[in-house]
Length: 205
Image (tube, rainbow, N blue to C red; front, side):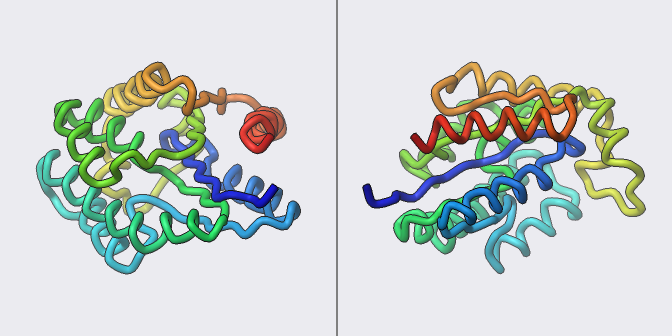
């Protein structure tokens, strides 16, 4: 059977270990002979990276923040993600739309229906084939992330904010159980990667 494009997104608060797990999975796919595109949101294109910098560092209200993120996402989809999927590549994306519902929705209070409208408008029916949420208590995530010399607007938020973000992620998992899998990121790296390998094996069968 000819391979088809695979789109996997990775979610979770800072300190959950997304980056190292994405890298390990990328190497596993490459060993299988697959072409892999690693990318991130907000970001992934020249334009989206500029919008990312604004979102992370410029003061703005929550809806403006959400609109900029969806603008960046549209360019990312058109320029990177959809072409890669059309070329039968594996796309591994550090955060996608679930992050917007978690951070701007649950965290900042942007209404769910507004975000859902933007989601349909910007991406149509496109969703990741699989979304993995690395779940972690905010206090543990903050301790793992360590001290940051120049924290961005999100890293300056308090634990209550990240508690709402975590709840938002878990709500997304409940809403889309066929797509979203939750992994307990408080376990060791080896245990998490074993769980991750089993989940991805099911997807690729």
